[in-house]
Image (cartoon, rainbow, N blue to C red; front, side, top):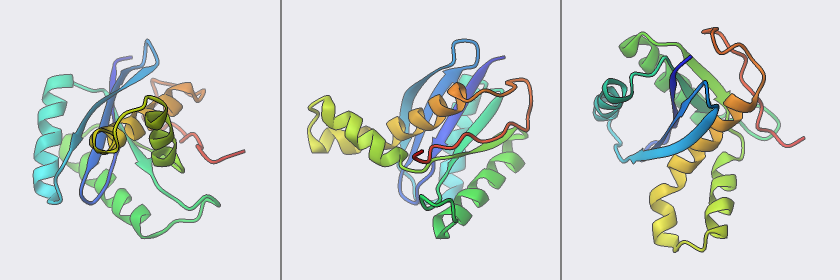
Length: 152
């Protein structure tokens, strides 16, 4: 039981969320604006030192029917980089529609479009992590099944 960091990976921005397995509550943390993988991993390294997570959750994008696309492969490579560099369990969690859900939720807060753009990726990471927390699984296992965010 402990801290979990979650990522909504993007080629220009990566949203980050944090949560605790005991409380099962996710919170948006930050957006890392880097399009260089080495710089992104360095920034993530600082977060890992600060938060000391027991595992990482990465949102895995697919089409709504579950089929993979180009970004799926990039995210799988990102998740592999995290595994190699940090020697932590990395769970790939379905992230279908999380960015749209994040935008919808932020619109309800009446934030300006400019302000929304600065936090939408962190909120998407929060939704990925919260869904992972809400899905029944063994928090002590490094090989959790990914919850599906696909519409029912």
